[in-house]
Amino acid sequence: MCMVLGLVMVVLISLFACTDSRQPEVRKSASEAAAPDFRLKDLTGREFTLSNLKGKPVLLIFITTWCPTCRSEMPHYKNIYETYGQQGLEVVSIDIQESKTRVSQFAEKNRVPYRMLLDENGDVAGAYEVRGIPAMVLVGKNGTILNRQYAAMDTLLETLFVKK
Image 1 (cartoon, rainbow, N blue to C red):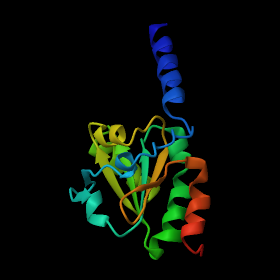
Image 2: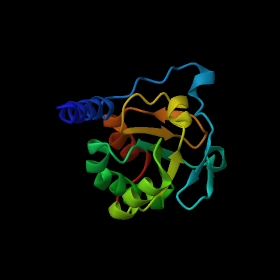
Image 3: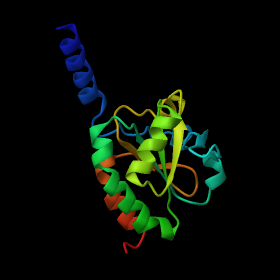
């Protein structure tokens, strides 16, 4: 009985933690419009630093491997990468608080074509005020946050790039 109750609790927590809800609007003051810089390692151990990409637009996709919506959206993320990556959009996935082994298996199984970063402590997700996953944040060429509205991301990308 305790095992069943425990399983029900895990499922309920997963459903509430993994949402496709809209992210809150980013505050509009000048100091808060800048994308927080961060440094994370990818699955090969190479460092990724956001500020090194100034001059390029960057799409940050916050996920976890256990999130059903994150898994079902993988074809969408790959399509974004294939459509806009050759036009200069840097796409990176940031996995929140999971082991390198688990994320590597997920990336291999899903044939993820872009870099996957490990936010082992959740610090970057916290800095970007991620409240639900999956979440996307578009950082402009000048290092400011252009959008964090998940539902509006495709429309914005279409206006910034030529859809192929």
